[in-house]
Length: 207
Image (tube, rainbow, N blue to C red):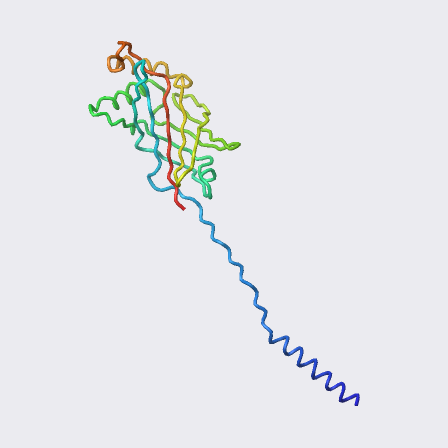
């Protein structure tokens, strides 16, 4: 009887272990979502400027048609992509859509020509404490300037107002006001070129 009991016990054990081996445990496959970062749309970067003339502060608008970005990062937010980005803008690419064709050469040769080393306007963008700063070099002067910025519908926009006196540009302002003396007169007969310039930049992103 002992032998029969042991035999039955052994068969039962073998059957149990055999069934265990045939059981397939399906391990759920981990699906990792692919993180798609932001990239800058080619030729989408824009820099617009607005100068002012006459005592009424009449706006004169323009752009720079060439902007080069360096050290663009990989990231999932505009802040990650643009952190530490260096930019350079050839002054010769200035464009104000002046129908007479005389304004742009004057600004390039007389206004920027009166400054030091202004073939290129250069700078770096940095984010700190949820704020954007631009370190701008012009007329051999480097200043850090805060910018306001927004990001909507994949468009990153930033703006600020430059005080040209901060860059030692008084001589350049006097030179351009002299060259455009009558053109910068208002109804009061006073010729004035303002020492502030509004600057706006745009960068379009895609996922």
